[in-house]
Image (tube, rainbow, N blue to C red; front, side, top):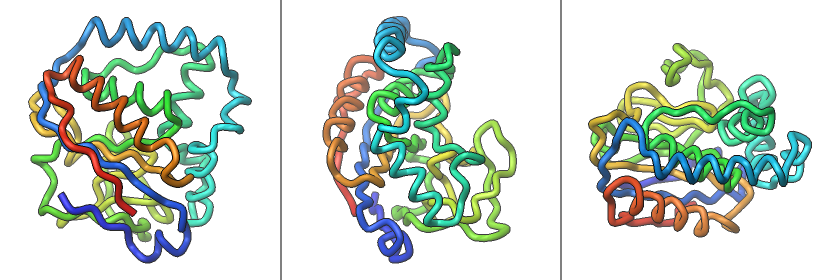
Length: 220
């Protein structure tokens, strides 16, 4: 998979660096050992942070700033990492979807990065390009219906948008039948921390998704 960053993103967000993980996987509806790990992490996270702490989390704040630079209000359309962190810090449980989505959400909260998770076999073509959403551009957010992505960073394949920091697209979403995962960790704050987040995801894939961890690479 070739992942490109458009000139419009490079100009507005010159520090952007992404990390992609491509892996053969086996999904499952629920994984008890993973949820034991999530529960332990959640308890520790709530003991260490408050909703005010989010203001000091560089990856979250950098993504919010990228939204503003691209023309989107990050308080109205929250990036997913921020939304997940706020949810658990307010005392609500993490959503339980399926093993692949659940482990991606864990990495997102732990790192502060918004992460796109895609069924690689549903992606049209072999190239993704990160650009900025246009007025009236069609986009079906997962569980959201039509989503206004104008002014929002968006990954596009040969057929259109598939991923934003707020929501991925229904067309390429992970399902129980997903056998090839593409996960993209978005570092609007730069490269620092990306490799660690990628290694953590690969470790979770090995332990909970019958994977060898696949391959990971940086792009900018």
